[in-house]
Length: 174
Image 1 (cartoon, helix red, strand yellow):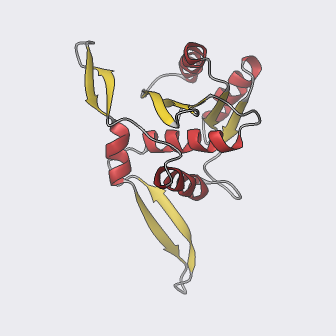
Image 2: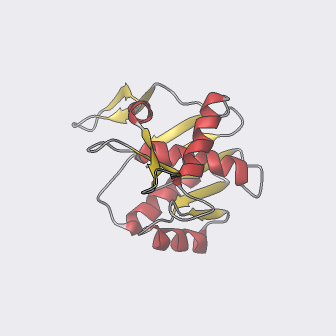
Image 3: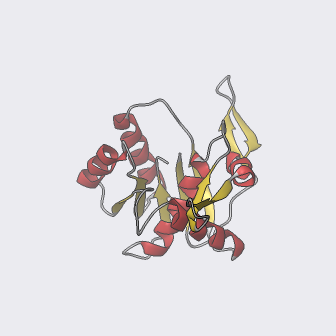
């Protein structure tokens, strides 16, 4: 998922979901969207296979940051708590409907998949064998996706950590 947030109006202004494409195609899509929206700062999921995407983007684009969902002090918990706070305090918003393409390739207005992902997103409290709380885990229920949620969470993080106060921030792929 690629998403672009306009920091001046605190709103998600573009989102694109894709899967099963090579990392080189992902890099090109990110570059195209960044150019089209004149994005100043990009944050990319660097977990797992994200390393080559980040490295490739950093060679040609200024202000690219990688983010790993695993490991302290960063991680998914901090990212999701930041997103929850931003939504509750209206530091970011998103449309209920987006323009997408149907099976025939025609542009149509459709429900924003982010809404469904946010509504189904869940957390679990982790405990050790002695029943002491050891942390939280955040994810979509089995069989569902959380890519849009993670992408928006990365964009929100980018809004608050960018080295230059950006007008537009982008994240991808999540």
